[in-house]
Image 1: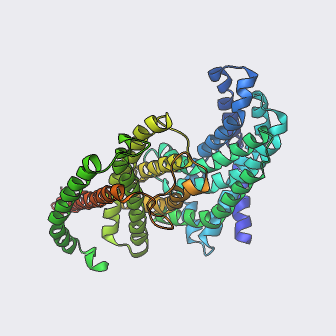
Image 2: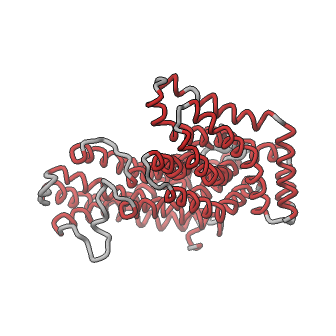
Image 3: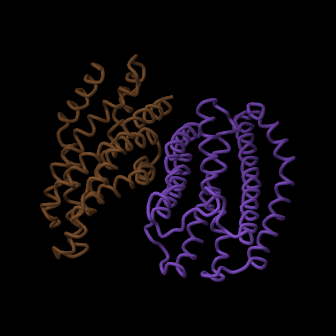
Length: 221
Length: 238
């Protein structure tokens, strides 16, 4: 467990000292999300109707864009080989890296989500289901993304490939995440979609680090 | 299973099977199409458009069957390093993608007169679309690396991750209240479809399977020969 904490601390420190990286993703989230009022027209009624889906899609794309730094720098400077050689289980190391990535990417996104929601005229009463959904859904996105990032490590045109691999797997999270907000907007209880997101998270937590570790191992062979 | 890890032994077996598979494809698709287009009754509600089913349903079955076969091959490639399993996965992936696309396109052609729309975001349609994307990702990953072996291992893991989608496709019509009709052939209490329609459907499904065997043998053989050519070129230092 101390290895987990050490790796988590190292990754957090690396990202925080590099400063801009984490904020860049948040900036993308807001800027790209702010394009939609220009595209679909700035009528509040239209925007409010599509805002939950937009916030979710933007969050998903932001997580996707940030995935390339999950393993890439470690792969390039050789720290990944050290992690692979260490006696600690690789699954645990992968879990630590995913946790660190989630903390520096998804948590800022959740803080920024109300801002984007405001820009898109989302009803403030719908923020709780949106944020709860993101809290349950973004870890799943990070875990699935880690599998994709490990699979496409060192590939030609890795970024495009990564999105092709990961986006289909993201669809269920998007469906239920936006579904929770839509249910709340219709005045219906939104526990069921949130529970589905929780179920995805548990399944991803149980299987994901294992699959990502297997992909990393074959990437480093 | 490891008996056939030797490409020569496999090729000998494949070449023995091949003419039979070609014959079965021609015979089954021929009789199946005859029954499907002429000898089966039109549906009492859907009229003649029901005949789309005889292509749509077998291709959807094949889309899932081929993916499952790729997943099994990928697992044996990862676990036992079975050399032909990798070749099979590489050979079968585009065929499976083609069956998936065929299922989607025929479904769309069928959906327009029946549901009034080319496409609806129904759970069954969405999950099959995801299956198609998984095939695309699998093919892209196979060819994304300078070292083909690396691409094969990565694609094998992706194929195994994507298996979660198969039960979702199968049970999507039961879990969600969908526009797509529920299972009517493989279900508890026997098929609910009339024997006059079931016969051509099963003939077509068997024909599609035989066709898959034919194409996969051709593609595996080509891949083995391509590898041999590559090895010879390397030996000659050029």
